[in-house]
View (tube, rainbow, N blue to C red):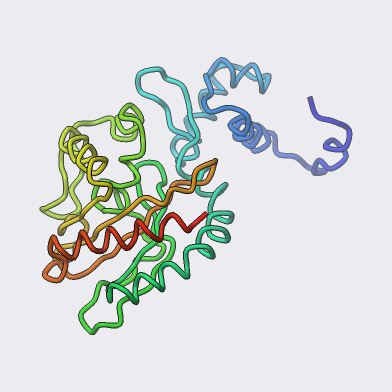
Length: 255
């Protein structure tokens, strides 16, 4: 039920379909999942109309539907809109000095990223000053399983959540070296949990390798991670371990 203040602020010429779609989105504000029956009861509309509205939200990635339970959950587009401003003002400002410090210590390109559904978005970067270096990827979105940033964040999720993010056994490759099977990804995530960092050797771009660590912010903060990226020839096992240690020590300072 809308209160009188909301009614007074309503537009003079409301568009009913838009109003219903926005009210449907607002239902995700108070719940983590939504069933079709809940949607049409809450909106006071027919079942078929509620289904069409939800289908449109899924199409535009504002919602995702669990293939088994058929419930709807907030999608990556909705989370992006809701979290982007806060994330970028908050974690980018907090992490920037850490990125600069790590770039200075390693001499390589350092990224900050966040998880959006099954993808990773690169939020910020400090590029290496070397002539041969990995270019910054700020603003780019890649499959999480193809990046060290993404894999280390996926490793923090329960296995059933990872299965929902990737409902098919087959994973689309980005390069010939990308993990192509979900079962291989799950095994890799177990290794990430054991050693505390993720690696990417030519999986998102040939000739480029990286190592990623989790940013343990806690609370309701969006997931985040740091990575050091370098030409593959410069990121051997010794350099990977050193970069992971440097990042772990500093990631804990990002609150």
